[in-house]
Image 1 (cartoon, one colour):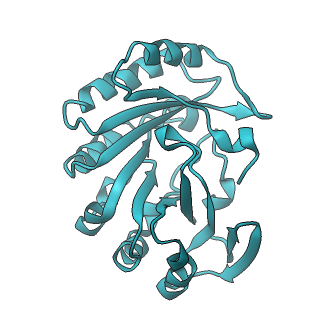
Image 2 (cartoon, helix red, strand yellow; image 1 turned 30 degrees about the horizontal axis):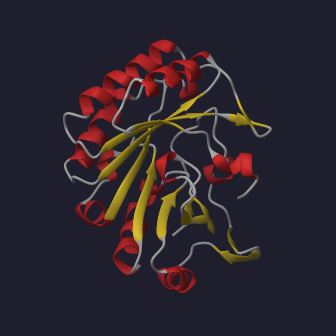
Image 3 (cartoon, one colour; image 1 turned 135 degrees about the vertical axis):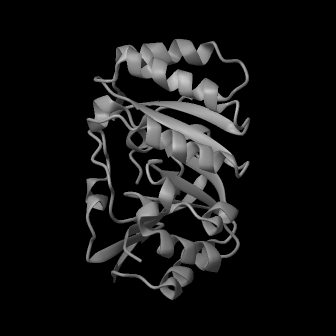
Length: 240
């Protein structure tokens, strides 16, 4: 499996902010989002960067499941996030991880554009799906139809799904209304659904925008705790 980095940190996004997580960042991505904060994961790295508790090391790619198990087994009981890049580009490697790693709660961070990569093995092991909603202003194309198919498939599992939308200075109010429309429609398919608005940060400050003000008002209007406005905490706290 081609892994860009493995590290222990706090979850920096969604309502799980502040909880310790192991992160396994897969190399390779099928999108090029304007706000991406991990461009190193676009391509396959010759080495995997490992950092736990301030200690760093490197392993040559591809990693074996034996190497990954050895690295992660001392942390059984933690949440383990598969992130990227896009993990589902390496479906077989992901399935191997899920069937061999024991004692973890599994979190899938995905752009939700590869419904054909979903499988029964993946469905049976993932506990939480964190699905980014990709807006045309950030990626230059409309992916709602693809993301609709992806969501419909993972909703059938009954597992927790967190929709996340990044708010940028170019995010339009029309896009925000489209996000809200899909959130309301998709709640009819599963009640195990929440929505996080995540404003971009720059130099440890949240970037103000019209879409941020819109999200603030919409969050205030939703009383059941399933809609959140949460900045990414890693750049604010200056942690990896």
